[in-house]
Length: 299
Image 1 (spheres, helix red, strand yellow):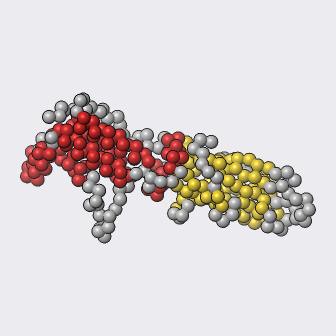
Image 2: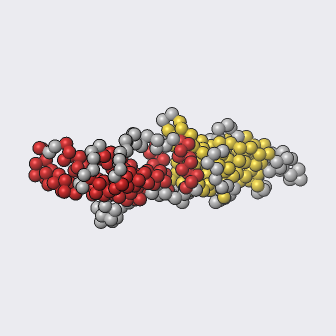
Image 3: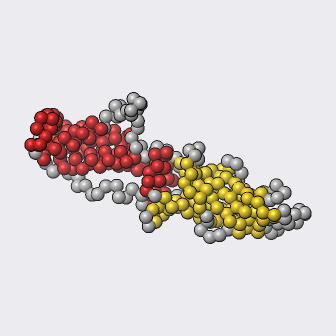
């Protein structure tokens, strides 16, 4: 499987038990991968399970396990994503030899759900909790058994999964880059290139910081400070008569003010960080405005 990760470790139990208390089936996650779907994105867990051999000295008859399903949650967050079944039905009957197999548990995610996962991740790793449950048929009747495993996914592995899902490929249209021999304007595009990488890594505050760097470099490259001031005054005094150039400069000035990292507060006067969508908005607006101004030649 691509996007491989370390094995999941048990939180409550790593396997199902027989009626006599002995371990019957244990689980481990061998890898996590992504896949583009119609109308969504698949998050796929490759789960390996092993049925332990039945001891002929036990007085009970062998157990049968069927109807295996997994509830998938974000560990330590309390957010359940969905309950899913394996790609093929799993029925486990015990014999004198161990049995093992691997099955995919596929979870269909919307873009909104992935964005919420990105908010939780905040540029770091994710950890999922897979809660397995099944029906056990034994000598004393039927019962429901369960077992949990934790599945940590490192940042680099998660970025691979996002790429496999093709999530985020639609964030921006193509924007032409022009800076000629002007090194100051080139710094703006270098900052935007860094911002793009930070966006996919989930470092949204740093995305905004790089956009601010790009804006300041563009203002310096075009000697825009006085023109920005004049455009802001014109908007206050005669906004109905503003020319297109003045309106674009006002847009750029507004984006610059949004990029003030230390002054974003909520109604309770508490600092609030940037979300993924806000970072995308600021990045898109900065790149588009910079490209528009780059059609001119710096003074």
